[in-house]
Image 1 (cartoon, rainbow, N blue to C red):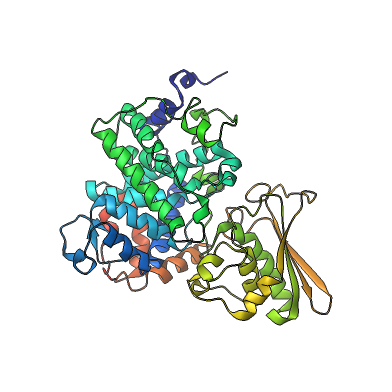
Image 2 (cartoon, one colour):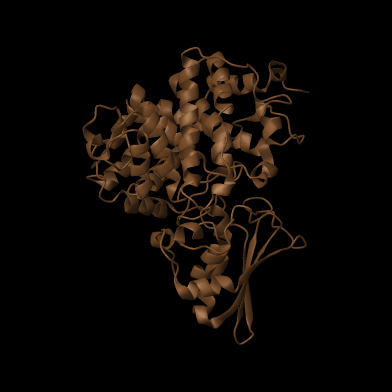
Length: 465
């Protein structure tokens, strides 16, 4: 039987879900939210000295040297500047995704928290919102983004759209609308106002414009929620129909109908859950990292030992890894060849491996001896994360001997999550020098539901450039 809300249209369904869904707070659900916020903070703080932050500030009209003295309400994470809320959303969204160190979700095939939390944090600071309201917005926005990503399907991403951006703006509008208590009608129009701003092209992967997508989407969502709150209205149905968002961004392909009846049962934040990263590179490379690490532990290769490297994927399994001949570590974030070459020949990867600096000549030569292969005849593991994915790394040495390793469930995925100690270490490493007491700052996130205002998260922060 069709869900009753179908008669009201898809956009109305999502608005009603966002405005009215009750949340049963369990300790496990809160922990998932705290993990997401902790990782967002770590990823954003780690990028605080990214040179493009100053370029963005100047492009918005701020004099960087004086920005800390200007009477604006909102924090640029890890930096001294004070800016308007919309500008904080934009810059923090960029910083959160700048290193590709932030979380991912397989439904989105992208990065939800960089968009959602950048939007929510600045608006919460602007409107003096309590911690629990932000948590509600984050959960509802996450569910919306995951469900939209699932409905858009793989073809949307493979066509060249960046789902972080296309689904992110709508979901940020929903998240902020829930946090601020917008009505169903206001949320319906916030969705429409965000949907008409949707964009983001994967052609920019490997450049600073890719993380800029997160900031643009977060800002679009906040602006949409603000306009709707002030009574700005457009079309009432923007998700459904031949000119609607889903039909247009599925390129006219038929797909599953939107039905919110089962949304939140369970929450997509809980199952399958978020991926958290140990390294600042694309999550699609993490299978190769683990497979290459297995071979490193067994063989301790030097670059000169290796005749060739074969990277084996199911068809489409490497769609995000768009760079095969990277010129520097930044481009290497999206190069399976670069990442495998590094991990086959050293015990650990570092943040510095993915900076915009030249690649070691021995690694460049090994990249040139690497190639990809696609196999539809290899059986997929039922436990694979994401579904249908695997990577096999096969090494042939100069003496003709070969060895291979396969990964179906990489470290950091929900099936093999980072330990609490690894999560805490990532935060403390990124936050060092930005809080008087990083342990206290870490624990404050775990008490967000008790904070009367979200801005209390910044107590003890050192505003450094």
